[in-house]
Length: 330
Image (tube, rainbow, N blue to C red; front, side, top):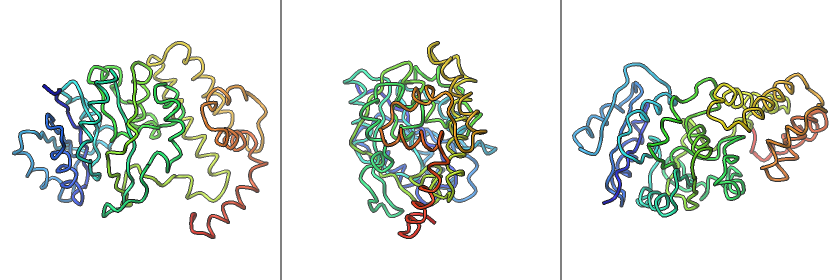
C-alpha cells in the first residue's frame, strides 16, 4: 500500500486562487493524501471557500485566531503532521497531476530523506513565463553540483518550499523554526537541516505551475533589482548574509563541530565588511571558504562587490543605466 502523505497548505487572503490549488492537489494521480490547511486570519473570502472543503474527509482545516505570519503558520502545520511523509504547498500555485507520485517514487527508490524540484513559472492566467525557475534564478549549476551536499543550502536557499517532500522523522531536528532573521525562512532551514543530517535528491522536471501575480510572499523578482546604487546592493547582500549566519551561530547545536567555528568566523567577517565602504584587504580566506561553491562569474562578482566596491561602483552605475534604458530596471 502506498504511504500516506500529508500536504501542508498555509493560507492568507488567497480567495482568488485557493480553490484551483486545492483541486489540483485533490486530483493528483497519488491519492493516499491528507491536506492540512491553516488559515492565518484571512479577511477576504478564503475562509468561506475553506469551509466548503471541510466535508471532504481528505482535508483538515485550522483557523488561526491571531495572525502568525507565514513562517510561523508553516511551523504550526509542521506540528500537525501525522503521516511519515509530508509536503509543503502554497495557496496560489497549481500542481501538475504527477507531482506527488513522482516525488514519492524518487524518495523511495533512492532511499532519500528529502526531495525537491524545479518549477514552471507562469502568470496569473497560467501562461508560461519560463519553463524553469531554477534556470531563471541561476540556481541550476549549483543544484546539479551540490544537490546531495549541505553546501547547496549553506550560503543561500536553493530549495523552493512548495517543491519539497520530506520525512516526519526529521521534524524534531527542524522545529522550532528560527525567527531571528526574515532571510532564514522555513524552506531554507528545512533544506539545510536535512542536508546536514540526511540524503537529499533533486527532481529536474518541474511539477508545479508557480504563479506570479504581484502579491507573492516569495517570487521571481530579486530585491536588489529595485536598487539603483551599488552601495545599496552591497548593504542588502551583507545584511541578508549576516541574518543567515547569526541564525547559524545562535542555533550552533544543529551544526557539526567543524562548521561551528567557521560560522562564527564568517559572521565576524560580514560584520567587519559593514564598516569597510570602499576596500577590504582582510580575511579573504573566509570569503573563499563560503563562495568557492559558486560559479567563477559569481565568485568574482561577489568578491569585488564585497571587498573592492570602490572599483566596481562606476561599472555598476553604467550597467544600471543600460538596463534601465531597456526596461529591466525601474
